[in-house]
Length: 142
Length: 311
Image (cartoon, rainbow over all chains, first blue to last red):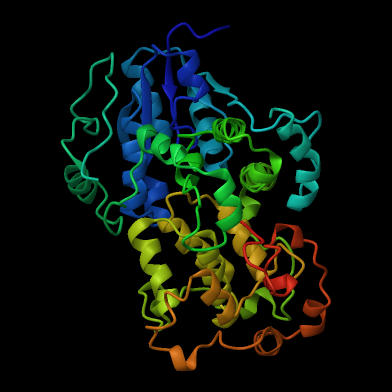
């Protein structure tokens, strides 16, 4: 079932206009949360927080700080939302936050456009193995 | 420099406890962050966030010049990494911008290959992170230095954190890291090698420190590159000597360095191998599998060629 009244959770990996959640739901209220625990535990410097702040300002997003899942759910409640839309995250920390949100409210994670689409998962381990498979496909677009 | 990005308007009401979006300038943002995050060290970076800044940086990209000069500290590097890391620009957008530029200038794969390759590295790191998850914080393999993981100091020495090593290069890199939140890839490699091999500090202490400061910091490219230098994600350790650093930094550090006459890097690669590692034969016999990523004009040895790895 498609969400009727969603909110958007924009995280640190997708602070640009190519974010698929922003593209697909341009009218939905969006939120970015500064993750207090991450900032504290990793001793994140003010430079990094400032860079995120400036980047988030460029997008139509409410800005908050705190526990991310709690803030997202509170924002959803504030807008009487029935779902949360976000973009797929690589960082396991963001995946854990996503799982916490999804326990209380349906969460849709949309895939951003890939850099290169490969028919099957490439062999990793060393860059050279991956690039042997990926490079010719990347250059097909030239 | 002092202006903030134009705040995109919201079509819903704000609450008084939301963080402000109507700050007049960067100075106000700096003060706000000092108040909201009192434990977060330092000041704002001169590198601005936001899409407009990202597009400006992208417009200055020169794929051909990048390919020729990227190993030099003053080379034509793109400085796009903070924007790519946070999805302000996607790898696809940068790839398409490179392709457009090549077509516009009647250039081809020879001119754009190096930069496209770099985008591939970023994609590779992200795929590795998806695959490894939290295991990215662990040694991927044994170290090939003759030392066990437990032989390395677990904490970052204070003289490095505070920029008091008396090595002008390392203190200079530290200062740039702490004030700008960005370092040239070659400087990252030299600093990592110094920390891990000369000071025998565990790569994780250095990698975590980098993540405190780097605007492009993510554990994928950062931790695995540190491990590549350390040799827990490669066949042999990466190290360098003074000749290499002096060449690619145009000697900007050495002349004024208080350790100019006692430089710990001023040795041949053979001497450094003897001094830094327990297991020299294995290192010397290492293959040159990564030589394709090295400057063809370099006269250095395979394990110490410049920029064979990207942070």
